[in-house]
Length: 525
Ligand SMILES: [Ca+2]
Image 1 (cartoon, helix red, strand yellow):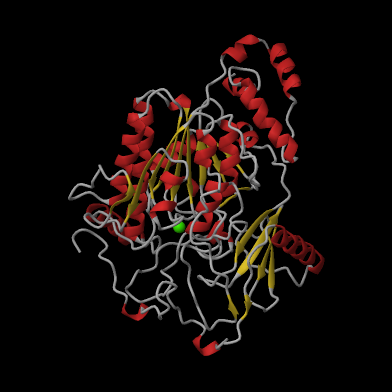
Image 2 (cartoon, protein in one colour):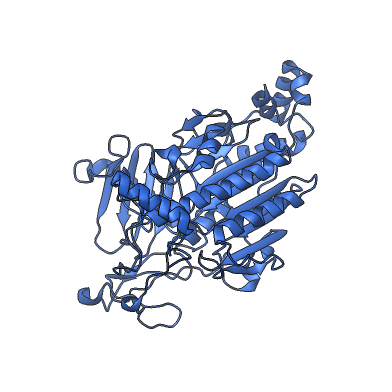
């Protein structure tokens, strides 16, 4: 019944706003819904109790972990880490099996979440400021160094519908004070910077009135900030984005938890994930637990949509691969590859959505969805208008949230990562079960995979199915032209012997990765 009630948003107290929002989808041709008059008629036929039960636009809490892989959770089949709160969240809602981070690294995905656009349009194609390898085959484009202030963010869209907005944790969409969440539609912000151990992090932008305790770890501090924001809310619906730094390197966690996973690794013979990484995931689970509990204490579970996801796939090892700098981190098996690659392991990530009045509990979906869908989805949930003058590449996932086996009206999703970072510059397209990775390093190489029969991307079918490969390459090329994607150019000083050398974009000097020391993994090290 409740599900049906939400289905009639075009008729209740928020009827006009919802109808406007739906019409906008209709105009863009992305979405076909009942016209408002028909919706009204349908509601009349269904009777007034439904209309009366219409829920108000819910609070929305979006938790986006950093570098958490697709296979790093209990609910996605990992039997080494313990994630009871996240697993409970999955049981209370819908888990996506085919959800993609729009980028293979941080900033591009964050750009897509905020804007509702594929980040290739904006030019945030690498983590800010990006890697620079001057002697590789191609010179790669610079990434944009901040999310432009005229981009309408998801916070600005929700504010226009009366939401109060908050941002906590890592931002990574511009370093200057003028590019922080406070200037991108967030009423409250506490941007945290620094690694995980006590005394090494603090609020760097926004609410500096809260300071970490002397023995407090970063993830716990971010949980405290999130609880504080939720506890302070009044009757206005709110949107809170919590973006903890966990489980990014440098790996560090509480000694007791690390010891627990070291013992577990010894007892089970488990090699991956790394015990410190497993402890960090459990800390992240604790953050989710505290956020859910804060909502439950206010008796607002039925009025709050909780979303949990990650900004890119899991990491094998740090980029410079220094022995002892950071040991092997995780595996994304059965997926191939890792963060920084367009193989599934770099981009396929967890997504869980819980919202009892709308989302059927304990369900999964294989609907193909991507980070730039959040903006139009949350706009639809909040009955907010999408920006007038900003292309929205995403589609609303609302039909899937309501009915998980619904298919979405979209042909393909696209990735553009023209950088050297764990792999070669490339773009990719997924259309149905097929995926093409098109390398942009002047080799003309492409890989074609069928994800239904070969989830692990073990068999490149490009030579076997040249027609399919050519068709997808043509579509991907057309898409790159449409979004004016920045491309690498041939490097006149290409030197294979020096290709792996890495220079800093900050000071133009070689990165002294050979002298990198390992961070202490616990407070006792
Ligand atoms: Ca990341």
